[in-house]
Amino acid sequence: MNSWKKLSSILTTAALLFGCLGTAAADPATTAGTGTTMTPVSGKHITILHTNDTHAHVVANDKEMGLAKLAGIIDQYRAANPNTLLLDDGDTVHGTTFATLVNGESIVKVINKLRYDAMVPGNHEFNYGWKHLVELSKEIQFPVLSANIKQTDGTRLFQPYTIKEVDGVKIGIIGLTTPETAYKTNPKNVEGIQFTDPAAEAKAAVDEIRSKVDVVVALGHLGQDASSKDTSLKVVKEVPGIDIFIDGHSHTVLEKGLVGDHGTLIASAGEYTKYLGVVDLWVDGGKVIQKQAKLIDSTQAADVQPNAEIAALIASIQKEQEPILKEVVAQTSVDLEGAREKVRAGETNLGDLLTDAMRDVSGADVALTNGGGIRASIKAGTVTKGDIITVLPFGNQIVTLKVKGSDLQAALENGAASYPEPSGGFPQVSGISFKIDTSAAKGNRVHSILIGGKALDPEATYTLATNDFTAVGGDQYTMFAKYPQAGMFGSLDEALIRYIQKAGSTSLQVQAAGRIQEAKADGKTSVPATQAVPSAPATTPAPLQEIPQSDSTSAAKPAPVKSTPAKSQTSKPQQASATAQAANSHVYVVKSGDTLYDISRKHGTTWQQLQQLNKLKNPHRIYPGQKLDLPA
Image 1 (cartoon, rainbow, N blue to C red):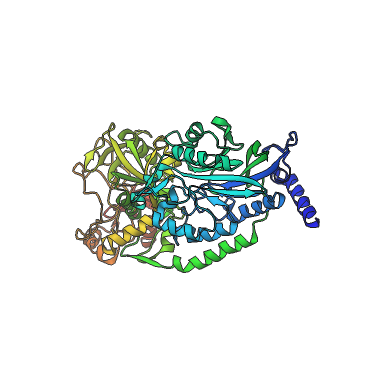
Image 2: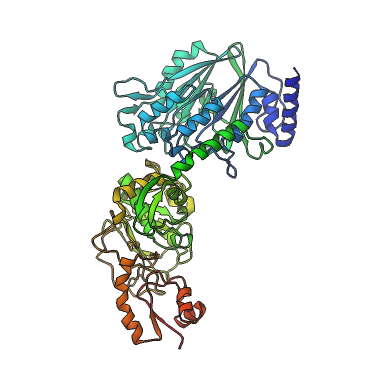
């Protein structure tokens, strides 16, 4: 009794500090997230806590609370109401390197400690392949449910439902997985299984258990996207008898839930541990007499301490992963350029390599990723997993979209709008080449667009591989947001590792391929001249590099191509320029790797004087072979 009083006191204090959390958990008379009171409800009070689309975001980051913090909140709810269930709605074991380094096993360890009561696999659970998911499910210490995943012989991959008894109340929980999984993971990951109609399977399950239970909960990774055929809204419309539908997949934030057809309460908790979902219901005489939903966010839970055991477990797993991060995954014979000021203002060889990898894994016509997503360079030599993750730290996924040519052109215009000034949205591309006229107005700068050596057709449909950030309009690529995902192909870091291994060290290019050039639309030479790196030897072409297009003219300078320090063997062709340099002591011919600052120091002047003397609009953009006047 004393322990109970102490816990009640703690919860009351917490309620005063952050609103609805403690009060709602301890007091059924509190409405969802408002703090106002209702008429007291009779019957047994059941609390269902739920998460969805956490995507392995286990560590706190800004509004993302992380799993240790969620565990602290869950602890308080369980202390306030022992009649509490914890459910997960999928997309849990994949998404960040914490998970992908060990194929989801780390997440299984953490969610086991959280003591979930059931989960449903989402489409991302299949990113390791369905057979590996089955193996993971054997390590998960609670039921993994899905009524609509079947093998080709018709047998289910997982049990369709489970029945939990809580204080004498029987609760049936039915799992449903989006049929979009068939194309929202790599198709090879789901060979040999099929995803049947979730509404039909839900109806069959409800008919089977409705007379055996007091409460029916659908745990459905379906979502509410308008582009989706099978949604939570469709299921509750077609299937009576579901009391609560815990939703996921569309990352929808339902602050107080949504009442659908047949009075079903739909609840969804957003994404990435930004929220913990809470459903309170009261059951009397075998019937649900009241139900309500709310969300707890980081502001409301500001004073809740993370669960120390979960925090220690996460830290220990991170420590264990350090040797994995040191694992050698590839070799590179050249520096791969990913410096912030370069990938955001021009094409680089690392940008080319990454987008080639995206196109290779997806089979897309075109690949595009935002330069701002590339966070570091890779030095020539040994490449570790940690190096790759430093370059691509966000865990972004590769998705494909079927887009019109006119929207591809609009995307390139968006990416080139700030050029030559750096912008996170600057496009690194594969399968496509184009030119930028910096003298033209923004929105009308891009021209000479070629896809597969042919002019872009504004009315044609192309398959685009991009990342899941730009696919939903990130970095102002809003023209992509209207398109449903046509496929999903794993994370950027995984694809890059596989592609470097496949391509081999000697095929990596010292310079970017010249897919993006700066040239006036009328074909005249563009000014200012911009950086380019000498072409790599013809004997070592990079895989998937575009063949120089026939419409390229000498007037077009390889504009956004950013230089990386050339290796000794590639610097030899530059030696011929020394003769010309000696013939005129007041002219310097730029070598690969030069900067205006370096040149000014060698010749006893300042970079500002060189910029003014040579009328350079951008002092950062000089290219090998360019002649610079020196002060007399």
